[in-house]
Image (cartoon, rainbow, N blue to C red; front, top):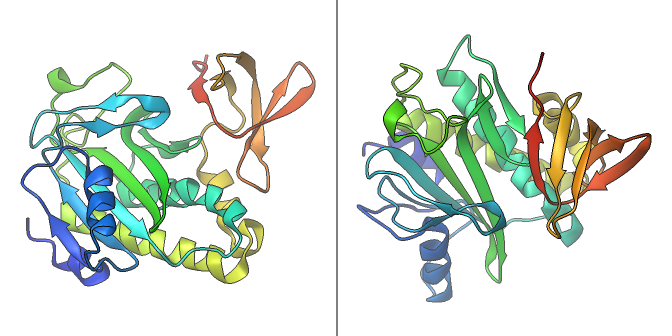
Amino acid sequence: MQLSRARALADPLIVLDTCDSTNAELRRRAEAGERLGHLAVLLTDAQTAGRGRLGRTWTAPAGSALAVSVLLRDLPADIDRWGWIPLAAGVAMTDAVAAQLPGRAVGLKWPNDVLVDGRKICGILAEVTPHGVIVGTGVNTAMTESELPVPSATSFAALGAAVDVDRLLADHLSGLKARVAGLTASGDAVASGLHAEAQQHCLSIGRDVEVTLPGGEMLHGRATGLQDDGCLLVDVEGTVRAIASGDVVHARLA
């Protein structure tokens, strides 16, 4: 891969022919003492044992998707603010994808799925480690319609669009770097502007949603906004619930 723009932002940029999980490999390298700075990036287009949110597996044919993990070391002093990092990554990737798909409806399904015309093109998984936060991103690039895992998924290829991977990575990295820096400097998502950006990008707000909580409880209601800590606010029969973690499904629009 010719990734000159992304390489200029990463510290360093590591490209692998194949990898089990980019998040796991980046963590192993950090634990082994490899020199990895803030915004160290490890990527492959042939991930064999990817992981998604809530313990799901994530697989794709070799060459059809890009798996990228980024190590963030310069973080807010208040660890409670780290919950905003997945949303910062989601906002950054939403902008990066939208820049290459003019005319398409691109947005963020809370907390960190990027949708194009209502279908998922990218998922994000952030993990706290002793070395910082690792943000893993899987983007469907060359995946054909027949290779898409579910009808609710899409890809650049399925949309008939050629993706500039270097530009996509560089836009994502620069956007993520700026938003994490703003959050770190201000110590607050509202003051940094991230809260407003995330609300603007979030397609879940104003929609009827079904939320499956980690313990199995299911809620039905209308998403009304984001709390100051990034939780999704859902009005359930007049009672507003703050959702910190869960699987959100958007109700179909009439």
